[in-house]
Image 1 (cartoon, rainbow, N blue to C red):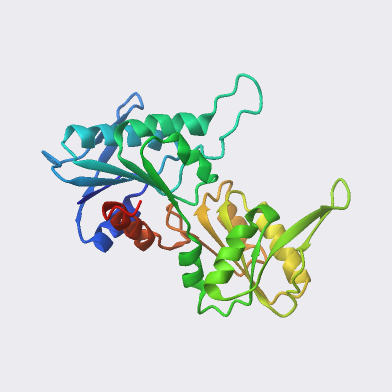
Image 2 (image 1 turned 135 degrees about the vertical axis):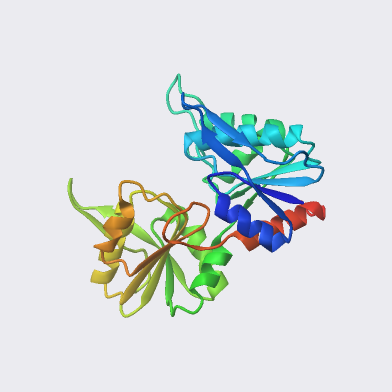
Length: 290
């Protein structure tokens, strides 16, 4: 087996190759003067099963993914497994107004052309993967997040809203801890109240878990509310750390005690590895388990 690392996911690809004890090849990717992507897998042939690890975010990385798939196929790859740690456009999975594209569907259809199986991690909606005709599997990061925090003295797991309550439940079960979700109540046009639905956090260490953090505004407000309710420490963990608009800098001046994310995206706080998780899924796939 050969693992090829795209420019968006090079570190994870390298770690995955170590876990799988197989060859690692970094793709060489640059841009032409006109901005078009150039990428090359610098070998003469790929007479083996190939795993391409590459995010489809931001837009330029989608193009690189298409080109890497085609290059691997032309080099003779026996099979192509596409690992997409963070699936860009996954949140654009519905048409709200006439004239809009179903963007997630389109991305799946194009990525589907040159691969035998697809692996994602905490994709926004797992049903999106049904747009692939090849085998597909979405992995859940809850176990590795739970393992990372097992010795941190956490007392309770919270999700930022009821929509993510299932993730808090999964992490809580892995750690043997209670879980709850936060409720946001609008008191006026400018004032909202955030509080746990049922749990008492007074005197407790709290872990907030979510699938992704973008600007971090909701997490900061939730942490402030939890501290006001008596929480002694508030940790935050997510699978995908987008951290746009200087979110990490904003966290430094907030009540949050610690922020970490998985290494699906490269950030200064990507401390939770999903390499073992992906490796097990790949082994299961070749063993015919999915």
